[in-house]
Length: 611
Image (cartoon, rainbow, N blue to C red; front, side, top):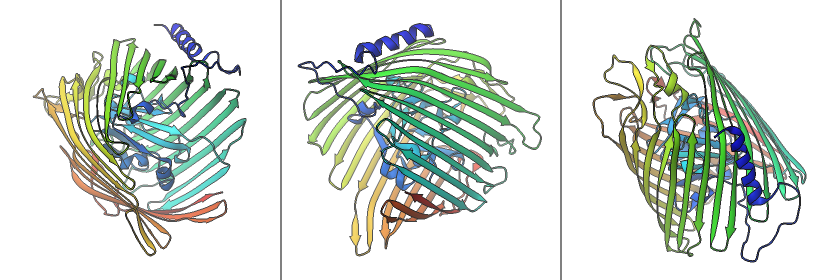
């Protein structure tokens, strides 16, 4: 389907659901139809009932504003954030044993996965000041226009300006670490805006792991009658030494990335329902130098991802109908991978019946058309039952998802790695069963999962001396259990209060149905993960401990502890908050990616102002 017809279909869809946008006419009222608007048109809002979803709230983000946006993900149970560079410079994201390519990353539901390689999926041009919350869905969600969501999805929801505020933050620490950030929010009945900037640099703890990055963003929203038009612009620069990031044979690697993200959308209501349409563009530039002291071998990669997406909801007494359409394009211009373009079109249909107060049900089906791989289908189904109303619930879900190969998997070539232009689409069927209890001051969760992978894509070789080749593996099954506990507040004694305690344990296993080869990524998973968070307030000082224990199937076993101490002082609308951070206070020597040693104890401090 050509691009012109795709755009026409999306515009017709929008007009049919809500009428022509922004004309300001009075909506028609039907006797038996009540139109409701989902507040933020979240792509995963329908999942919150029956699926495995973990949300990083705005309160948590504000408490941890001293961390980078990527670091906020580090405390999510079942999520394996494998760092190469610190402070969000580069990390691979895995959920419940997935590879980093199998997790979809989006901003307000707009895809930002890098089509060159998933190593750049977390190049997100936003600051922590820009984020309202983060949704982590631990299941494949291809059925909602998520082409890379074979195993999981991470959706970053941007903050809307609600009050006039100026935030300023400074940071300093060991290894010549320095940083500064600010954010200015100006809400208004007609035009609202937010401007943010962040900069951080360090000589780093090891040779050739120095880094510097800059991130800037601008958000504008115009309120019209029955319509809101908004624009989000983000830009990021990263320059860093990449000691052994991709190969232990080359400790002098260097990389420079530039990321531009732009989206503009309009949201309105009409006689039949509500909808939001977005046009978006992501441009990513990657300059890779094999030896920074002898830059004879340099690769340049530039990718473009752009498209148009529209989603809507129609609600009536007994159900809610969800609809979505998207058309998009991926392009790459590379000195190694060549020049390639691929187009896709997707349609999504969902239904949430209102059966009773005790039973919840949701269904979603997606249809996708790819220029190279043809028609692909996906679906999600969730069912839940409240054993005790609004307290104890048993629920389950199942679905099918898929992922198309990255340009690197298709076309990359060097002395140690060989892409494969004949790669097919990888698919998975996933199943989950969970039990949740929500009390006034306690949360308990227990769930088990099974993900059956078909034609999974990985880099394989028969023996150590062979070249890594991108291959469709065949069948690999992943299974596991996860237990979570949350208590708030726990204990109060005079001037000391244990405000919050969280604990989670995740067990994962994989079963490869084919033998006789070595795997680079797909089978390298966590076996055991324990996470513990403790928040204590003593004499006005706020202590936050984050403890983690990780045991890998084919890697290391290690314990890491982080500590943040802060004191919040407030006079009317002015907030002054000094803080001290000790990353890896346990001084553990470990690596999360083979050969890339992580820093030991790193002491940092700073001040945050808000008025």
